[in-house]
Amino acid sequence: MSLKSLSPPFIIGMLLLSIVLISNTSSAQTKMRSIEELIADTSGWPYVKELLKTAKNQVEILPVDQTKAKEALYQTQVTTHSIMGAIIYFTGGLLIDNGWLRILGSGNEKLNRSVPKWNKGKSINSSGEQPKFLLVADDAVGGFYAVNGGGLGKDIGNVYYLSPDNLNWEPLERGYTDFLDFCLNGDLSKYYEGLRWNTWKNDVKNIPGTSAFHIIPPLWTKEGKDINKDSRKAVPIQELYDLAIDTITQLSKQ
Image (cartoon, rainbow, N blue to C red; front, side, top):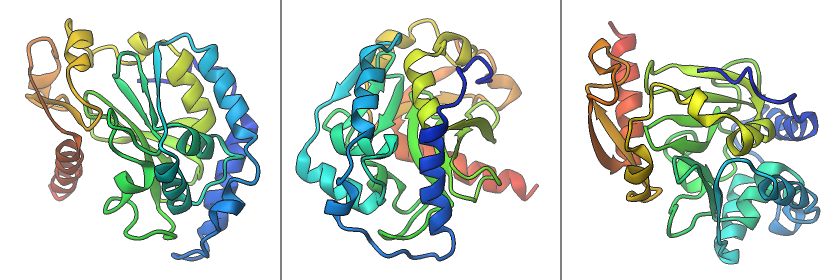
């Protein structure tokens, strides 16, 4: 897969997120900023609204619960000046391309996972802890997107993709803002070529944002390369994440 067709990076958004991540890497635990500090500048939201308004790909903006939004933003410790903070505080998340892509926000009944809750036990154990990566999105075939906090490479602030067809964290060479722009405007059919089967649109509509498809044989094996011949079953996405991490661990020991 490649993001070479992406538009030039949105430098401001990328730098903002990088600054947040870099400033926190000096210690494992950071001083928690109040919700009032985090929402003092909401300038990220008008940019996000315009991006959503002009999106080429189908997108569903999930309604936000303000109580959940405040809690999610506080736990994540990003401001609404940033694009990620705006997504968390002003949306319950985004469902893109008939729900194939899920951008995590503060949670909604259709996508019952917020950024901090989804990361707990994976990249963080408690609020205020500096993550080595932050999971921010995933797809219906069990691929996971994360912002690098230093644990995936030297390019802090950039997004990586844990691809189900090779189980590698692939650097996308783009920050969160440009990644979001790609999800909304990029050629997803080309990007996901080989990972979508003939009836994927109808199948994806019938599963919640807390599930994804378990492909057998696994896509990373020689036997699993033809997805139209593979067996597919919707399972909790937590199971797919655990399976991916466990498999990576086992393969690294061989």
